[in-house]
Image (cartoon, rainbow, N blue to C red):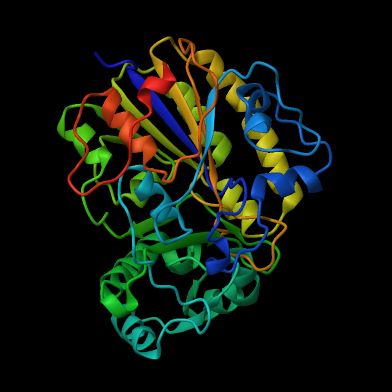
Length: 396
C-alpha cells in the first residue's frame, strides 16, 4: 500500500546550504547561499522553515534550532557534473548527468552559429555575450526597438537567451526565432541546455520590464525519469512554474505557468483542493532569477520571508495522506563574486501531518533520493539506468 496519496515537491530555486567537497573544481570556494543570507540580511524571519528544522539542519546566524522540529531533514549532495537548473532537476528524478552542458560565457557564441541564426531569422544579432537580463536590456533594448535587431545573450548557465519587445518585436516572432535557435543548437558543438525567450515591455532605459511570457526550449531528458514512470502508470504529474520546460513536457500530465514565486505558491495552495493521486512538482524561480544572479542579498532575504508566510498557508492545507518535500537544485550565493550559480549542497525537508518520525538523517550523496522515494511510495519501478535509493520508511 502506498503511504501518501499526494506528494508536493517544492524547489526553492538556488537555495544552497554550503559548499560541496568538490565545489572548488567548479570555481566556488566557501559558498553558502542560505548561510550567508542569514549573516548579511537584517533580522531574517523564517519561522515556519525554522519550525520544520532548517536551523537544525544548517547553522544560521540569528535563527535558533528548535527543540522538536516538525520535519525530517538532511543535506543532499549533487552526484552529477553541474550546478545548473536542468542537471539538478533531472538528477532529482533519477538521471545521472556525467557530462556538463555547453556554456559560452567567456567569449559568447561562435561566429558560425550567430551567422546561421541571423540568416534563418532575418534579424541582425546584437549583444552575444554573458550578461544580466536586466543590464542587457538597459544597454541594448532601445537599439533593438529602433532597428529590429535581436538581442542574444548567455550567462554562466548553458543557455542561449533572446530578448524581444512584446510590442515592437512581437511574441510570435520571438518564439519563432527561439525555435530556430533551438534547432541550430542541437549540434553537439553548440548544444546548450535551454534556449530561453525573454520578452519585455517598455520603450526606454529604466522602464524595461521582463514579462511572464518567458518560454524555455529545453533539451529532452537523456533518458526516462520517475515522471515518465508515474505518468505511464496512471498517476498525476502536475507541473507548477518552469518544471514542464525543464523536462520539455516529458512525464507531465498537467501544468500551470507562474507569474512569480509567490504566485507559484498560491497555485500550489490551490492545488491542495484538487483531488489527485500522484506528484505536484513546483519550481520557484525568483530566488535565483531575481535575487541570486543579481547578487541582491536583501531581495533574496525578503523573498524567503514572503515564501515562509505562504508556507504557513500551505502547511495548513496539507491532509494526512499528503507529503511535502522542500528542496533546491543548486546554489546561487548572493554574497559571492560574479553572477553564476554556486556548487552547493541543498536541503531536503519532508513534512506530513501524519508523520511520526522527525529529525535529522545522514546526508545523501545524490538528489535522486527524491525520485526514488516518490517511485517507492507509488509502487512503480525506477526507470532503467536511473540512480537513487528510497528513504520512504524514514518518512513515516
